[in-house]
Structure formats: C-alpha cells, structure tokens
Image 1 (cartoon, helix red, strand yellow):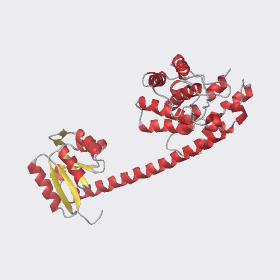
Image 2 (cartoon, helix red, strand yellow):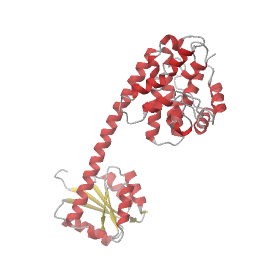
Image 3 (spheres, one colour):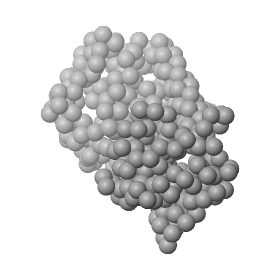
Length: 350
C-alpha cells in the first residue's frame, strides 16, 4: 500500500456503533486511516462510486439490506472494493458464511480494536489485490489460448476450401445453443473453442478424398473417421484451460452409442460434444458440397428433430430447433464465408 491514508468506508445503521467504529479506526496505532461513515448499503455504493475506497467494513443488518444479501450485492456492485463483515460476537458462523459468499474477511464486533482490526484491513486489501492480479493473469493466458485456437482454425481452413467458414459457423451455433441452455460461462467458452477446431484432424486426410464426388470406399471412410483421433492427439499437446481435446474427440459420438470413434453413449459423451454434434450436422446439411447442392436449413432441422432422443441429445436438439424456427437464427456470412464441410455428411452421402 502507498503512504496515503487507507480509506475505510464504515457501513453501519446504528449511529452510536458507527461512531465507536470510527473512533477505533482513528485511534488504531497500527494503521493510518481516513474514515467515512454511511448508514445504508445504497449509500455505501454511491460513496464508493464517487470517491476512492480501499476497504469496506459493513454490518449485515442495514435498513436496505440484511444477511448475506449485503455481501452478494456489495460484491456485484462494488467488485473493486474488498469487504470485511462485522459479525455478531456470539455467532462466528455468520462471518464464515459471509466469506464463502464473497467477503474478504470478517471481524467479531468485540474484536474491532487495535491490531486485530488493522490486521484484518491489511490482509483484506492484500488478498483482494492478489485476486485481481490473478484474474488479470488468467485473462491474459486465456486470450493467448484463444489466439492459438484461431491460428489452428485458419491453418486448417486454408488447406481445404470446402472447410472455409464451416468450423466458425458450427462454433457460433454451438455457443448460442450452450448459452440458451443456461450453462456456465466456462462451459459455453469451451464449447465455442472446441467448435472452432472440431475438424482439425482432417488436416491428415488427403484433400482429394475430402472433396471427391461420389461414394467413398471402406478404407477412405475409415481414414476420414480417424480425424477425431488425430484432432484429439494434436490438441492434447496444449494445456488449454478447457477440455478441448476430449470434446473434439467426441463430437461424432451419439447418445445411442452409434457414433465414433469409441461408440460412447448417454452421459459418457460430454455435453459440449453433444452440442457440437447437433450444430455440425445442421451446418453440414445446409451447406454446399462438391458432390451436391445445399439441402437447406429445413431439411437439416427435420433430421435433428427425427433423431432427437436417439442420436442427439433431446434438450440440445430442442434448443437448436427453437433457435431456427422460433427465433429466426441464421448462419452469419452464409454465401460469403465459402462452402461448408461436414464429415458426417461426407460419409453418409449417396
């Protein structure tokens, strides 16, 4: 901390208790504080938004908020201000619950004095700063990983013109489905990132096989199916913060066990892979192929509807159908980003 005074915002409805807290802070020999006092949570939010506040010392019994709601609202509205909760003298569990809810620390009211209070303030500020730096580091690392994913996507799509735009469109639809399902942000991001590289493994498949009109023989079909294993093996070399390699490995599995490469079924197939499976089939059927024109969105949706609950996760399928039929979802850049490619469609053609 710098040499300037540490600004402590006391949030206490009882005037006498607020004055006692202010005097204890000003009299503390182990800290140099500037103290502001407000009597409500909304007053604290307004004050902290108007002037720099280093730490907030708050009661859990306020006119406009009480209990853990105070912690949750403060954490949401003032994420940059560490919170220390004033817990009842006879119930330390309240303080522990507040810390679990997002407070940096707690002090019992009869401990609001001298070194104990100064130590709580110093540690709360330092922990909050450390968490902020950790979040910044994670965000930087995440951007770097996202950059790697996009480089891999570009490299893959440049090799095969029939892939151009396909993985991006699948990733966008998969992300939207995951979002509509109400999944956690990390799961949504993992789904999107895996969607961007789900066909990476076809980089090992000869281009003439990928784009050849007509039926494929058994050996050629097996070679194309092997793209799931190749993609997994490439991506497993990176320590991504998401399980991208596993998702890519499973994106052709089906919940009835009819998929590949391992014939997984039901919940053994990752939810992210189940989402990409639906998005992949819709985009593949709706896009042009070198051996046939695009079949169109409606035919793709009929296929998803027909196999919902057997091949495809019913919740994922229902969400996808609702996006297109009720909410008028469409693939961005259709007709501009180039023809798509779908391994499912390629194997099943004819």
